[in-house]
Image (cartoon, rainbow, N blue to C red):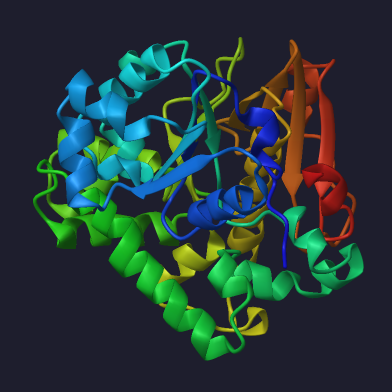
Length: 375
């Protein structure tokens, strides 16, 4: 059995506070919650946001109904809480009115998108985001050497828990296709503003083929036949739904630096490949560089989240085509990283980067040293 990054959850749970665990569907939020409940000594109540009676009761905002609901319990746990109307206000009532109560709620992307727990729980919550499994989490199943040997598999199939533990390539492909087409997109299409599932899927395919490349909104609008506002809204929802991750261009003072475009990466390589239905082995692909870059960007993002390492992340490019895949701004310092799947020669620091930011660090990340970068 594998160990997730936030285990044990005890250290994040406080009296009269709500622990909110976000993340896309099928990454293991429910498993993480139930694992904690199995070993806790607290008297708990476990419920689901899918329960219609629970939706009615907690959505009522009625003290006379809500307070008896948790009477006698030290811990309230609600899975799929995004399905409960006004859940943020109900949780505020509980943590404000029941001395010592602890609350854990899990929610898929729509929980955050709906903004239900924002203002009502200001100062009353701790938020954790769970992603597809990180390489560091997989160390509970294999050692570094074994994970390195499995890199081709990770680049193609990603690291959703069900995919990692699937017994065959066919099972991995079927699981990924189901997650990509039935779960992640379903969350986004649940919103009234999303009118066309076809446009959404076409946008996802464009982003998948351009992973690691700069995206120009005007080109996308022409290809999709929709207006810029619609594309921006869809992109924003895809980010909040934990499907894609955006990097903006970095610049401080060099006129030749490009900053008006963004790059989009997928949170999971397997989802990216499922969207374009490409699961060929690496030796039969022409996108290995893009797969490696997407993989490392995602692993580094998980590392920053799980290690509570605050940083601003960007990419850097000049009009003369000098570029750096990832720039991190941490504690007032700059760190540049270039991702190379099979470097044929030593990677040199771009001259403009070195001249403009002489104090910045620079490192090439390859399959030989990537673990030091993500752990």
